[in-house]
Image (cartoon, rainbow, N blue to C red; front, side, top):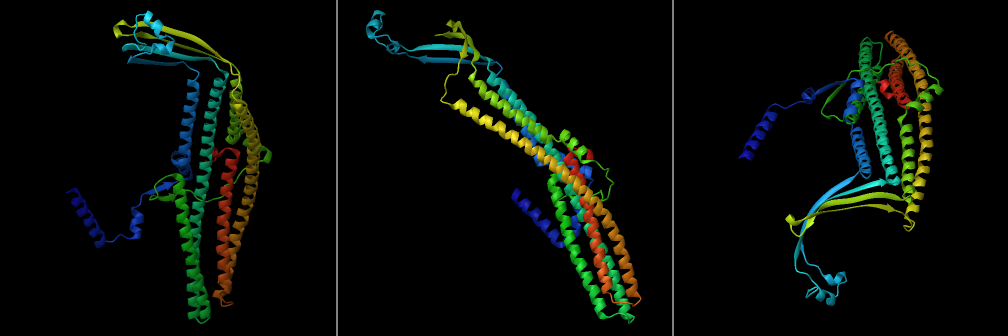
Length: 449
């Protein structure tokens, strides 16, 4: 019955869709809209990004591992209740048949009897340097997980910031292509008017029409790249792909205060968590080596139990045992020495990685500074290029309108103007991207946003 109802509802919906088809524009308008600034995008990424969420789980796992190591140093208390019915072969305990006969027993296997035992147990490691070092190493693992999570968070912030800037660049590219089309339509109308007045040729009109169609083609490409940039941004944010993003920030030039390389490098050495995380990895490797080396040292532990035992629950009597165990490692076939050699190798590996991480931070700072300085110059050159291209276009249009030349100069000026727009967009993108990269290289990406 339920299946029939669902089928009927689906049929009604399909008929309604056939009767009134939904256009692509209507589908777009029905999609939920999300207005997003750069700051909002960063916050959404920190809250929803998959890598950030996975690193949070890694912190929880590292903390659980540290708690496990701590548990080996704390008292381990247990208990059990046991009731069994059994027989015993006394001969297996060194009682021959002649001695059993003296005890009035006719056979070595006893009659069945019951045993009830209720007991609590306690085991406490009093001294084990290896377990202590293992616990300290596990705590360092928690610190490393925290640092790695923060590093991942900063990387996600920088990545989303760059994706947001790329989306803004795609928006500006669409606007530039639309401006190209508006200009081409004006010049196409001018060419037709000049031809109607008898001062231009059909070739001039055709040339402008070709230019107009080329601009329309470039607009389609720009629109596709804009949607692709938005999809990449949505993926990084971890939100629904059906959301229609509206970016509220703009691609603009913000004067940047000059900083010396030495000053930026000093800030990076203080703020980059990758360096602190690697320092803790070195500490972890050293503690792991100490833990394995400490296995050579004797250990002392306490074990005891207390409970009631008897052949009947009501006849059970209290018994207990307690004792100290002093363990001295002597020889394990060389296993311990092999683990020590392996741990020493890991210590050396982490020292090598420390040098590599430090060099990587140095490289990122230097590259970011170079790119920022270059992009600032590119923005200035591109803005001047826009002004010159506008003058060229004005002169070419006036000359064509006066009948002093064909529209070849006009189409060349159009191409120059389109190239100048693209150069300015690219320069602004590189400038804003270099600011984000420099903030990340310094370890101050949170202050940037």
